[in-house]
Length: 211
Ligand SMILES: O=C([C@H](O)CO)[C@H](O)[C@H](O)COP(=O)(O)O
Image (cartoon, rainbow, N blue to C red; front, side, top):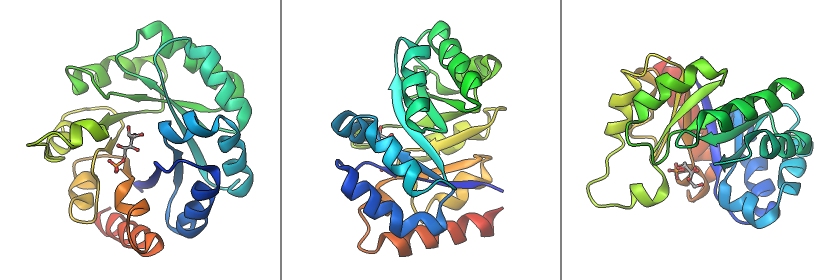
């Protein structure tokens, strides 16, 4: 069954906990966005895991170096999954995986900025990561001509477990799942909605209907 991940790109622990409280019944994974962690520190990870011990807490560290050290910090704070950049060297990913194994947790490789996301996904799949995020970040999404279809097409050829992040919404989420993504990541479609709980519920129902 495909999972729904809410990406919380808000800036304070208070706002993040309030949003998570509304959408938790409909999501499997709660992602603490990179700007949120940079603003609040890893205490936001601890606060979220304490509030939602039954959810997978995903710390979007986007680690580029010192993989073992950074991952260890987040796992000790309560994260279940952390991200390492695919454009980082394999040694950084291997280090983060080592920390994950020590804690019984997992690593997700974020392909943001990779020149060939699918090729990098296939390479890092052998390093012991949980899955690979095919990701067009906010700046890429705001570039004229961007379409999530590029990620959907990539997922169909990835031949390794992937998530898709980069403008997932109610209009495209079924295509995301049908392309083979095991996780659909939705940020703005939930946190910027007038009614985040209703938005998350609609995404959940669409995903379940597409499975
Ligand atoms: O990871 C993200 C971005 O780099 C900022 O942290 C987003 O959470 C991810 O792109 C999903 O958000 P939406 O594109 O708004 O769905």
